[in-house]
Length: 423
Ligand code: GLY
Image (cartoon, protein in one colour):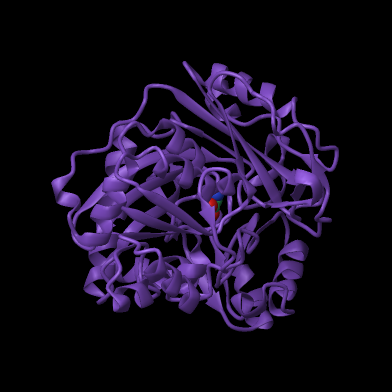
């Protein structure tokens, strides 16, 4: 089968790495891809949101399956256009993808379908949002309604910072995504990321991990798209997984199908494990980044039949996926300044070496520079991942590899997995 994989981040490099191992795949094409993906697949420089050209490329290569990585392509309606073209697609339609592309939609969805989540107010003006703060206690959670590349959430310790975040959002920091904001109850507990596949009818859990959202060690600094992950994460007890499945996953798939938009793809449930049970933090309509990286390292089953089954309504025919016993860790390397303004174009050296047993380095925001160099973008650039017999070993291998990378303009957290190791 020929597969078109849409996207260019670490998540997509990890998907490409795993798809490439499948005996079912004859040709893997990535658009636009990145230098890491170019080393294992063909790449075409087409934006994920350029729906017409992505569909044309899928036709041109005779794709038996298109796999959508990033949420921007879902919001742009790529799955809808592929459906119209009769090409099987892993990834939800724009209507089903509203579970990610509008926080306000999702909060109302949770109310309608009785999914447990924090209290909230949706506000269309700064004055209204500032007044709404009175209904919440600090720290205040302020979210841009739309897609903001993981940068749309501010957790403000006091009213002054909360009001500044509200002014920022309505001042255009997130463009149209900030035209509405959601003010939300701060949930106490431990964060977790759980994944579930759905083919429109049948659903199947597909792994879990823990992300580190803050930029700096000790969970300090601004929220990011994720600075590192590990899997399995001990917060996911069998009891919690069962609660998430029955209180969030199944009602979400049933609810969105009942709303006329059956879900085909992966649903990423970001949740808080509270003393009252799981509470939804947010849904995402795609694999997490960098959660996907550790999942792909641990997935023993062939990924491709699962992707294809979601696209074609045959998930009921497959057994539950098999996972390796190993632990996996991912350390994100980002350009200094991220998630704020950062300077793109610094050279990352030392990538050609052998990083040792269990280590895989995925490219995220990189580009090819002159004379075979690799240049960093202005955000998350590399994902240094490793597996090991336990979390400590996986972490030691990953950080050992990080130390071999020559990139003075980059930074990373040094405490990925700290919650599990502190238990
Ligand atoms: N790591 C969080 C996300 O992908 O949104």
